[in-house]
Length: 216
Figure 1: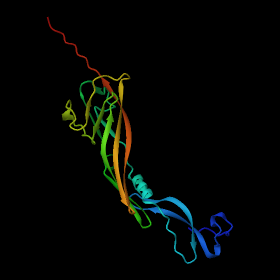
Figure 2: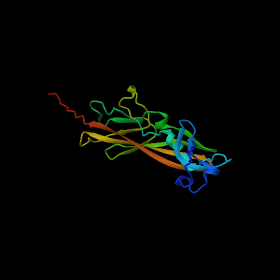
Figure 3: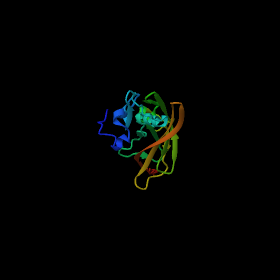
Figure 4: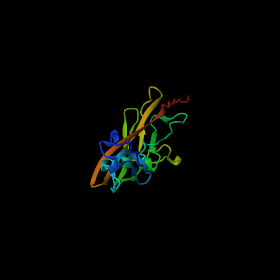
């Protein structure tokens, strides 16, 4: 988009002669799946007879744009018994934990961002999920195993917990944190970074007491 030329005295011209060129607004286009137009708009001076100036975007900036396109999400907490059940969990009985599976919650996710001749591709992989169970216990798992009814009373084969006490307030606060490992390369550079995303739930825990009466 070309800018009208009021004269070289305008601060945008920085003393350049309008007779020898013109100003244009350039917006960096970000390509790749889920991409579009974004980034910083900038005013550039183009001399008469010269081609458009391509904004210089660093590979690091493109990597961050690619990561933002991923839409990585915290675990979508699933529990058995579920947090919204009438009685919740029972002391001494297994609790199953897992996350609903999607590209955003369990990956892997790959996205590419481009600007001019530079393209950067980033890939995120779920390394682990740590569960803070609210009773002082921590459990580290993968995505976990969804509960099925015929396994009632049995421990989860991949991600579970057993409460040994009741919560003072009636329910334990559970925090599930997904730990992502993200690698990217492009534009002659490469790097690695991590990201942690947390979601929360409440799980009531009750105690069942039995009374044995011996007959006369």
